[in-house]
Length: 127
Image (cartoon, rainbow, N blue to C red; front, side):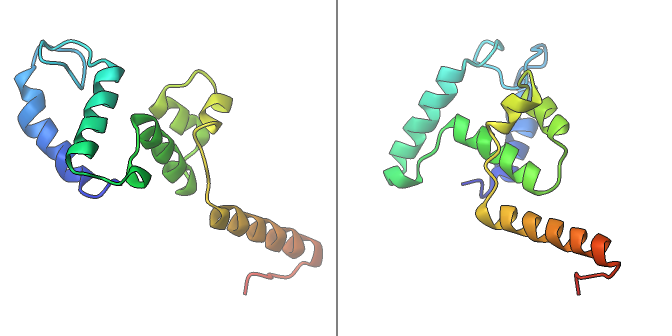
């Protein structure tokens, strides 16, 4: 769902954003003001309909936020850092966005068990 996002962001920052030099917001509307979240949601829905994306492959800005939180968490980014990126009030509200994969959870469990066994036995069990 995020293929080519780096190209879109580069285009935006190099070609679009400079057209609003006096605006304090990153993603401005046509007048340089705040871009309303409903506008983003509606535009995203329109673009997915325009490209005839199947319903099962569609996503929302909220899904992008959840994907951002989850991918950063699975890459080891601290929850407080993710909270600062997303802007929720508390770390517990940030955790509502994090949906780690079953593989990630299983791997974390296996690392914890191996670490505990190593401490109890005095041997490295990771080999």
